[in-house]
Length: 113
Image 1 (cartoon, one colour):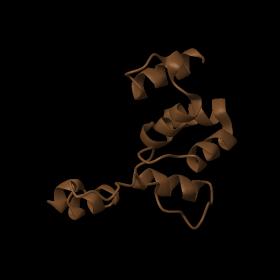
Image 2 (image 1 turned 30 degrees about the vertical axis):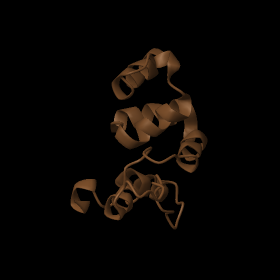
Image 3 (image 1 turned 90 degrees about the vertical axis):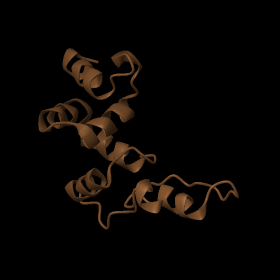
Image 4 (image 1 turned 60 degrees about the horizontal axis):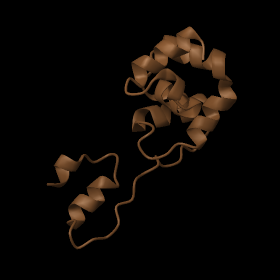
């Protein structure tokens, strides 16, 4: 990892040393939170193929809805698939309205209360 990527990793994944940040994870963070300059560095260092792979292998919480839609349009991957979601299992201890709020990225948890 070169110095420029180390600085980006420190900025976007501050809780880990840059050497411990997985490449695809860093690419996803750059795609979701990065500045235009950070995105240009990612394109130059990792290439479009890795950025597409980061998008294709995204896990819940990797992208905001806005970034998810943006990158699918940028890479002409239409129609845009649903954003990956966490599934909360049925449980008598978790009220249904909270379970449904947790699986819907468009509806904040506070709105379910």
